[in-house]
Image (tube, rainbow, N blue to C red; front, top):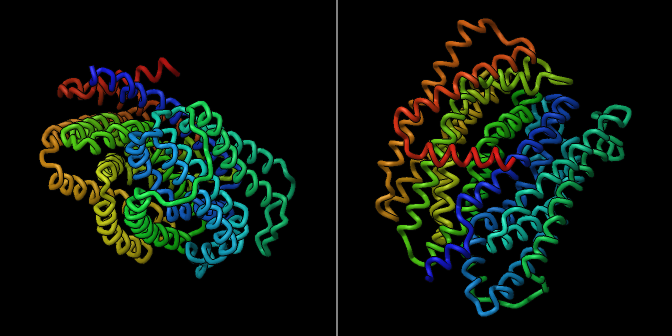
Length: 539
């Protein structure tokens, strides 16, 4: 009876993942569309490079302050606090009080230090970047830190209560606000002043303030959902013994984020020094790279984290291992075929999506090539994210930090080598390749570390599914290449031809890969396809 009650109380993984995947899919599509609009309206050059770096700063600083902690250990701690006599109300209020106060103070300091931050992330020595413009954007965008924090805090509370929908749909509203902002930017007359940069420039103010308002709305839209959940916020000061546990874990998370930012700083400086447009091309290629993971992987992780946290709290290692194994195998079946299509169709994707408006053919080609060269890292990236959640569910924030340290030690020298030996216009392709190689290192190291901690991880089953998925992917790549070689020969020189090539290759490669997975008798294919079918029906 107790087990049945528990099953009713906690939403099934399939149902939670399915509903979130729809919202996440819409969020990723609308988010990607406004990035497309940005490329069409502004192009890939100094202006978008400056905006991209400035718009990244609030995310980076938020992650340094609280983001990694919230995403990784607050949900497990909140889940455990539900066993309190008051259902965790006091504990949650104390976390929110400390978190929001700290974020407000940090936001003010960050805005004051905007010039320092942009100089850290931009190498202006070669004249291919504009630190002054990036700083002007940063003054307008850094206030997002407070609202990113509010959104993450409220999301953590809702997720701990197994309420996933509002947090998944809120970014869609943010994206719509940004789209409207870009339309206004395009309508406003004149050009953005570059030399000198004027803070009062109409286009600068429209883009900076409009994008920030999107994050404000994204946070505010969670308040009604939180009220419906029965939670009432009250400023609560004082010390809770578990806040000390929170602080200890947070220090390791901070170390993880700081180490990862070393890689980010080097990446941005190498790209900004190489050629104008490299930073924004990298950002768009990275967005495309993450898109499949964002729809499938993030939804899976968000639903699976509370389950793993509860299993870890109960000391049920077998349930933790089962969730890890299931997540790894489903990720392989879903993501490896997508990696194959991205590899063979990367150039076509870049030109089909971006060869319009202010973006020329060479820039779109570079973006697509970068995507194709890095696509093999999609599954390793998803596995690294899943493995980190397992460590955090076990309240182990130390091991992920050490794994990130190894990944960064591998990554940084390779990035500098890219800047030194690769043609400046091709550096972005090499950097994306290095990223994927780093994820392979992280995935292998994480799996070995978990094996030491948890014992048998069903690794043979995981490796078997990955191997079969890779074989199916190679078959799909071969079929798509043959079609391109004999049915659609020649280079891709226009957006129309790129769409034709992309559609034909996908129509050919998709069925071939599914057929091979069926022939290889991959048992995870059925739950994966049934999940996709449910998403299509719900959509």
